[in-house]
Image (tube, rainbow over all chains, first blue to last red; front, side, top):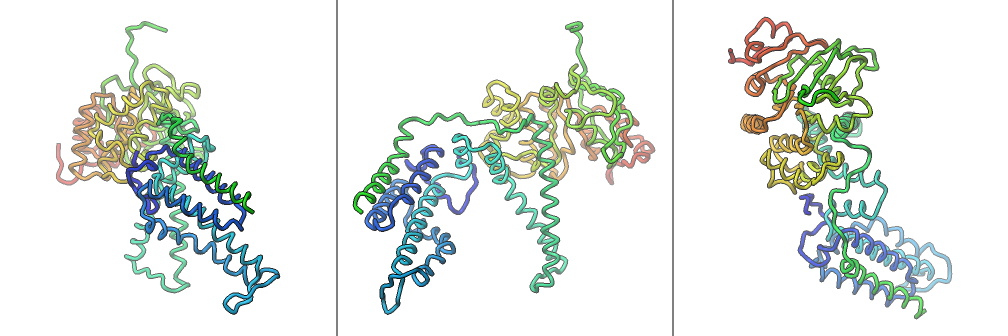
Length: 254
Length: 246
């Protein structure tokens, strides 16, 4: 079911991982993150184990390591704060490369960095192997609140429509000599955003009318009846089993 | 109920009155009868009440007075769901109508809501009828205007409606897409009410036309006859495009 919704985080391939039902992958990714978070921060070797496990999944999914690492820079703004911890953390301090660093701070920073990175990499793996549309179907099958999946489904469809409208309005402004280079010229852009909001709101009303006309009663009908087999669950949860074993090992060795 | 051989009109509108909450009286007593198999054009200037009338046909708006019946069933709150299956409205902007991520899901939306049996077969049939079967798995976003319009048509065809209601079907279509849509519509053999400003299109598709102005039906007759009455058209802000004469 490729919907033709190419998004930059998705890598269309034909692999075991790609073929798994989306709900299996969502559950597996969620449990994987739980395992990572539950591992004690001092169990350094275990985190290496997680990394090896992820690489194994990428190999199975035929995702180039470089491809996924490049997309993981998305995480950077969120971990910047972690860099400050070793400088601002409490005593005892240790000397490293001539800098006096807080030991708990260093561990705290490592904790954020490694768990954040692994979490992002797991999410990226899910995104790379599952088209957006299938993610929504998966959430629907996992009985996520109907309102959430409906809103997300509509967003998936209308984001591009609204972006197109915004682009046309921008073109029309520029064609009339608008060139917002200075702060005091931002007014027209702001009014454009307001107009866009109104237009989207009106479109929302028209879409709702059209949906009512086709018998909408408040819930998306489930259109794809795909039964998930035990084998699917077994395949999808196998890496999670390894991750859980790693997390337990982390607690045992400390 | 009644004689089984009685054939109800596909659409029967009797003395329909409607005022918007702001007090604007949009419909002043509309009467309209459409027999099964008829193709009727609903003409009229902007603000004549055409869209208001259309929204009454499937119970989205409730009349102040008067009745609407679809194939013998009165439009009421408790019949709304069956009425909406019977009245297939194709809205003017396909982007309003096509809201699902893929064509197939969108066409399946109506039948699934109405509990129509064997949805996949209905979807395939409807898409084939409009010549869009090979695009079932694409996003409506990646279709041309003409293709989108035909998919929008398929979304209501899949519900097997008693009457098709088309709101400005030819707007924003290039000449070829416009002709292709006409061929599809003529090939369907269904009862049709077509709201349009495109008078040549009305002439091509609908043997009968109704002119609505200021909330009342002011003319009802063979399309060619109405369109050749220049004075009548002029009284209701209608005119044939430049270069056309009947």
